[in-house]
Image (cartoon, rainbow, N blue to C red; front, side, top):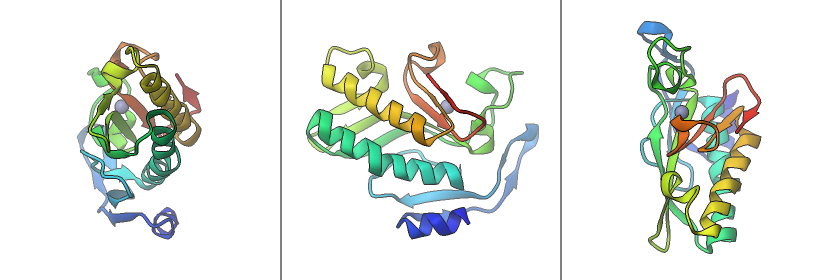
Length: 173
Ligand SMILES: [Zn+2]
């Protein structure tokens, strides 16, 4: 069902085989995104609902926000990846992160068509008002599409990326 929706929305992707790992980690019904209109670095396995919301977020939120606040489109999106078998916030012994279920993505930056590079780490509390507005706009838009959205205002672990996942929400900070 989700795969059909994804195809209908013009997203290029490959369906991955179900995989189960040690420690309760898995990637079930996951896809590898290939073409969503904007190149994205480091995307691995993503559950289909996550991939679908991500593709919509890029098209409907990131690109319009870049035009609005920065006056140029985004040429490439940088991420720290999707699937990783680990506890929440990378802590051993903590509850399994949604990353362990291929159900989360960490977005770290945006390369603009004019050559500038906007990172969450430098831009969120940086001196450029428009970059701060752009990052807050895409964070808020992510909160509307994903179950959970976390940015640098959430806790010290998220000082350099926006975390979005399709776990149990809603939660936005
Ligand atoms: Zn994350």
